[in-house]
Image (cartoon, rainbow, N blue to C red; front, side, top):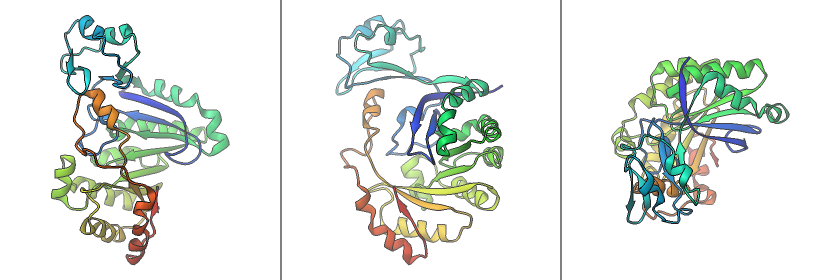
Length: 302
């Protein structure tokens, strides 16, 4: 039985699909989006993160670390060198301020299903279920497909959020077993996509087109609207023209840029590439509704 690496399980969620949901956040992603809100999800391996707003800079973690993996970094605090860390947990257990945590715990299919079903009383009453997020959850497509089947047998639903940069087999693994897919669309121009995320969009477009022809559930395409990255007229209009050419898309959703991931970058000792770019509000994107109508499309701003 395979295992997956989970860095968070959020219960009683209402923003990631219908009804009351359990959101399982999985580690590992091949993209390195400049604006990523979950930098702790990118590496497949387990990491130690420090809550910089809680840390009291007593240096106890650095002194006690048997691998000498923790040192002070100006502007960040006591940061762990992940290449040296063995996740022994000494720094976490000995932290006076409870400022350190391990991001990542291994679950097999049965263990993860048991965690999800702890909330089953809320699924039936609200039409909810489980949402797999990340990172890129389809790195674990066989486990997700199997859990999707188990959820179906109990009358609950499953949603997967994906960037689409996965082998087509991953989509085949979940087809007919997962009810909803949220498909992120970063940039229509392949070279710009590579500049912004580290990979081009060839596989992502190919997989979206495959889903439009084969997927049996509801497919939502979601566009994170990021200033200076994909908010220009050519990028947005190119996206609209491309989406107009596809079938089987249930909804198109625009997501305003936000800075909620900034403390996590600090906790990993990493620079935030978006700098001081301010968050956007839904109202800032309202003009896109009329523009989309010009292409014969209806969009939502979330």
